[in-house]
Image 1 (tube, rainbow, N blue to C red):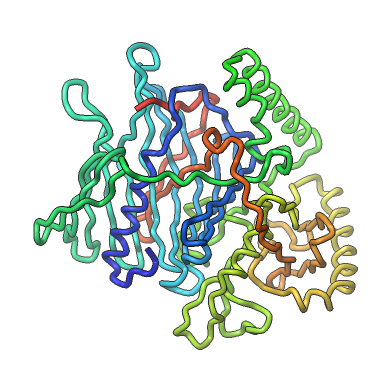
Image 2: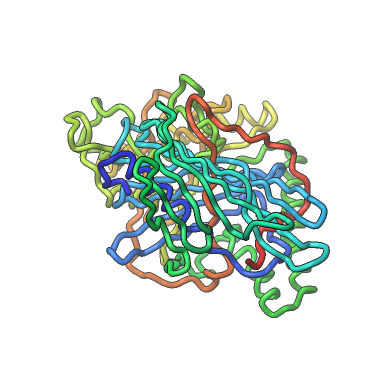
Length: 491
């Protein structure tokens, strides 16, 4: 997709990519496994051309539920950031999951430095029909919008629900238009689980956009269960899932209750200690209409890492390689997919045999006394680590991962804690609030590829979204109830 030079055809390729995944879904309508606060999931894909992509996600809020995710295919210049905010709604004989939130797909080899060419996306809502009587049915409904502010293009895609007396299941319709002129360039039609077509309005020519019937599903690959941390999705829910597979629903309910009770105890302990929980892998976004990373503010959470160098003109190319770079600019460093891969693997363990190389936490708010004590302790550790590790870091510096920017909610930079995990981490330097980036050890990719034990049961979150700059589509984020979301159903 990023290699297509024509901006309109590049936009069409994004629409095709977006519509290509909705037919992939688990069978049956079942009570969901609601993610717990701090739950994480990582996976990767190996492609036929020898390239690889990576996915990192975390449950960043429980009330209301919010899931944040990051995807990157370094050699294809593709990055996706998103926050999913499902909201339950009951409609008589139907249950709906209102899929609020947005995703931002970026082509890193195009657009402005530090941003890329962005495609801001929302997603349709999900409905489970027949929950009280009749045959259970899964439907996608309502509108999804894709906007590219850099090229002034947008797509409005309607996922049509079947009427009582007319219509058909799984139908879509929509259009692609030029926002500058208002001209409709293409019309979309078809079935999201079958053939989808695109018609050029100017010529009336209609052609196949994507055929989901013959599409090949590439399942994600994950680390073995024994290598996963306790709060990683597959390990966390393994006992519950195994009970469901065995059709032992009493045991499944018992195991699910254990996890929920554990979460309640953890929340009670935080309340007793006067601390505020913070995500491990994601930070709150910064920005605003005139701020850095315009458009990020709609995400709410973004990966706690800087995957590019903002100040290209001041970068020493011998010590830093920008993830986002265009060869035509003399002040930018060359794009290096290998370095990008190493930086992603420094954030979380993703590959088989890989252990977490760097665990970091944003300290929670606490009482003023403990806060001052924490500052004093961190300051002493800061001076010691900086003096002891400076020489080693000159060989490892990359400026691509910026854990230093983990919190911007009134916390001092000295309050950010970095923990060395394992002998291969190397040395790290916690920098002060002078605008510099932190330095972090790089993880080496593993050559061992093991298929997941439960790939067909636990799959990564689907991208969500909402539009862009001047006409951002904000969804109302109502307080979520404890009702379950019915998102799995037979088609």
